Image (cartoon, rainbow, N blue to C red; front, side, top):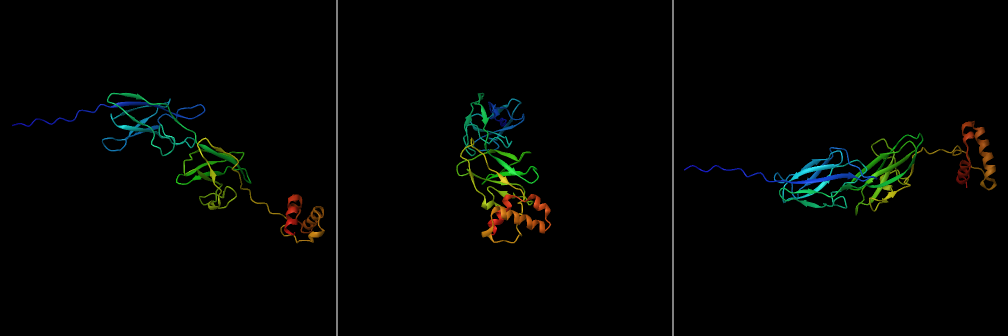
Length: 269
């Protein structure tokens, strides 16, 4: 008796998902062609693998998916400006909308716009005006970094505050050992940094400034104190000039400021 031959299972008919990825503007615009779009099933396996599609120049993509499997759509965009969102999600870790197909069905998804993130901006003063690194640290997420422009201005973009992860600290300059030289505001260490709270991706915090200039030493730091009770600002200025002349510090004499004299009077109070 001859056994009947075994027949392989017939190929399963797929469904088709069509969508378009745009980056929030204004105006909205597509990401670079070839941006990857992932369609995640509830459980990734050899039977239900993640489907990967790529965008065209106008941001559209087409993906063949298994029928009767729910897929969540996520675009792979990391430009430091837009924040990651699954299609239909309102926060970083939310799963988003699940789309399920019937065999042979074609589904056109709603427009998929990745939103701009929140921003932190300010001005950094330096001795030479050279660009310096600036970074915002968010716990469990890490650093989002930029550099100052030729005017010393900066804007950190693409920040993504979420519940319980809505605080940021900002560091400026390099300490030469992979860290920042100063933390806002005016702290030499990360532990002393003041936090900045962002409540949504629409927030734009300004005025987070820093001064990295080398502190100017007063030429009167070593000058002996005179009887403070007899000194007016004018007399103290004259005494300071006389002191600098006697000590042949003509350079300091030329740059002596009212603030130097006031600091001297405060020291000798």
